[in-house]
Amino acid sequence: MIELYYWPTPNGHKVTLFLEETGTPYTIKPVDISAGEQFDPAFLAFSPNNRMPAIIDRAPADGGDAISVFESGAILLYLAEKTGQFLPADVRGRKTVTEWLFWQMGGLGPMAGQNHHFGTYAPERIPYAIDRYVRETNRLYGVLDRRLAGRDFIAGDYSIADMACYPWIVPHERQQQDLDEFPNLSRWFRAIAGRPATGRAYAHAEAYKNRPTITEESRKILFGQTARSTAR
Image 1 (tube, rainbow, N blue to C red):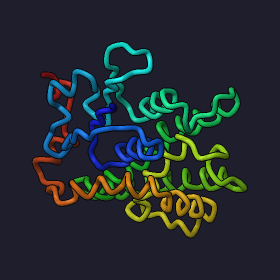
Image 2: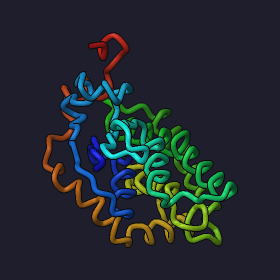
Image 3: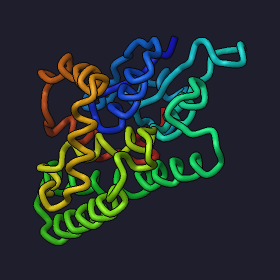
């Protein structure tokens, strides 16, 4: 059984996408990031960057003690290796999937995240910052659109690379991006949206949609932390 420490963010959705696609048994342990639950010492014991998602695998493949994993990309790799699914076994296929997984982790996610922050959450509008991240998000959409030319999915077959990228394209309107400008990306996006496992994964967000939105207190929790303030 997998314990998934989750909140309905793009990174949280990555893991539910995988678990639903594979039918891996799991339970959700919500981590309300607006309430600061990611700073709970019990959570920090296995997710030291005070970020979700994280998992605890109570039945690891080696039969030993439970294994915890933090960072969404590492979780996808761990689960793919555990199940033998959505990560090619051959060296070239695996190389391609991990390239695009790391592209998302190092590029699309952080840049789109800054897009969200300065466009939606920042207490004051900073036109330079907004323009900077909207343009960089647009550039990355273009990279992905070109990659998808002539391919159904990023690495040929559906993989953890697609599961990593898709949740960061879902909020494309918030990111001020028009999917019609990216025909290959738009086709790919619709194909993943139509998968039954995607519907099941995103249905988990319904349980949390009525939680309070960003307040001044939650803004401090989410965006005002330093090394000193997070030390427990």
